[in-house]
Image 1 (tube, protein in one colour):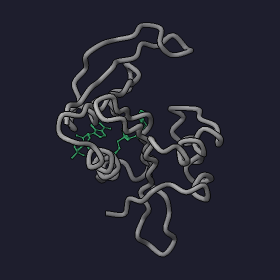
Image 2 (cartoon, protein in one colour):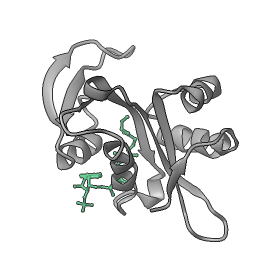
Image 3 (cartoon, rainbow, N blue to C red):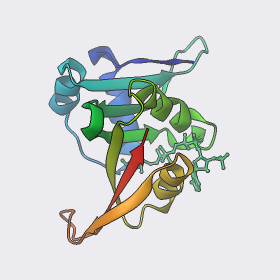
Length: 144
Ligand SMILES: CC(C)(COP(=O)(O)OP(=O)(O)OC[C@H]1O[C@@H](n2cnc3c(N)ncnc32)[C@H](O)[C@@H]1OP(=O)(O)O)[C@@H](O)C(=O)NCCC(=O)NCCS
């Protein structure tokens, strides 16, 4: 599986994916601290072509029963090819039976909600006005 740990040298490509998708606005230092944190898993999906292009990334906080998926993204022109699935499975593999993985997603992000539901996440709560633009967040949970 072409998923490996994220390195600081990946950040120009990771930031370009985030910019292209405009779903989040993390600055470079936030990614650097996730790469360095013991409790965090930051991974990228790298194409196996000569250009070794980064096609997606994900960031998890692995804390057993209170684990969290903070971010996941696949480059627009390579979505629906299983890359997001490979990335999320990298997190599932680090968790144990009985652990839970939480996440929050914008209510109107239908693509991501389909993706999460496909991977066994269930909505359990909502937070109105959660995002700075007033949008509602849906909280999801998956029990491993
Ligand atoms: C959510 C996201 C990461 C999914 O990545 P992906 O590489 O396209 O996912 P996969 O190809 O592994 O999709 C697996 C399944 O999820 C579901 N799914 C994924 N994208 C979907 C979409 N646009 N519409 C409906 N279902 C979708 C499907 O069931 C899909 O299986 P299928 O293609 O066999 O039907 C991607 O759409 C993305 O980067 N979105 C923008 C960023 C974002 O919103 N991130 C989440 C918020 S933090």
